[in-house]
Length: 325
Image 1 (tube, rainbow, N blue to C red):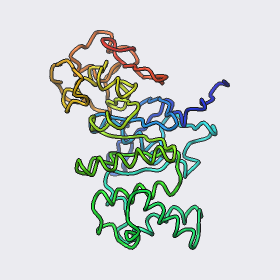
Image 2 (cartoon, helix red, strand yellow):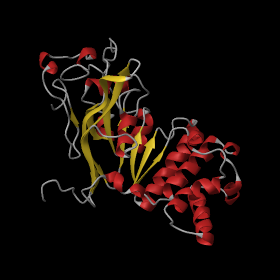
Image 3 (spheres, rainbow, N blue to C red):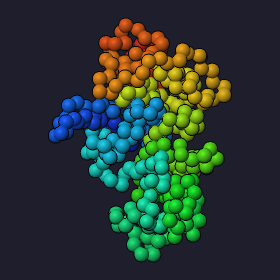
Image 4 (cartoon, rainbow, N blue to C red):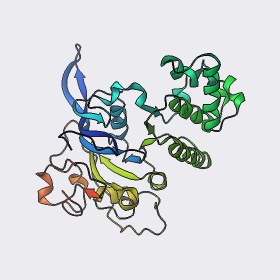
């Protein structure tokens, strides 16, 4: 395979991606520093899989998802697809997003029909009766009645609003959909319905999902692979069934210990509760960023570079004590 080429089964390759935000102060708002929300993250996204990004609030998972969509500019690194070497963002219809708050992402002045048809109109995918038929088909695919086409977002339930958001994303016939906490605002029964719908659509259209979530129980049921993030870096990555039942990194173990068990058969050893505060992203620790709160920290943790490369499908952790540095 030529240098820099992307394997055929890989939809896109994220390599050494960093996202930084400037810190401005003073009357003239001069830049006095930067916050590294994402720092040197790399992984491959396989076609047809669900790849989950998990971690505490502020770990950079949503920022990374937005960077893949190029809603956020990259400070460093690259995101390329298998079909071409230029930026993934240059193919605007290739990736779509479903946000956490469906009502906030839907224009309240537009009807459901107009919302779903917006992308169709912008990209001139269909016109007239063909356009209207396409909208009705999309609503049917997300299990909404034809009568919903004339309703406004506020007239729908939360689950129905999210179905509209999914229909809008499907209208572009994307290869990738970023699901940014797409089910976290829904109650459990509706959440299950939406997840089942997403699975069915994935099979029907061969979709690839980047699933951003803090809910490890949902991730265990929905994702094929998972990457655990802390302070802008990936701490552990591998198959969801492996990472969530036999975690190698102390941070992953702490996340699991503080949440409901993903698998009733899993037995995660009890570990000490984490102490200390999350470090500042402006001045993160050297080496492993988790070392200041880690119960098994070692002297070498402060000096080694723990930036993780792609895992090739196997479970790896950026840890001297439990994983592979």
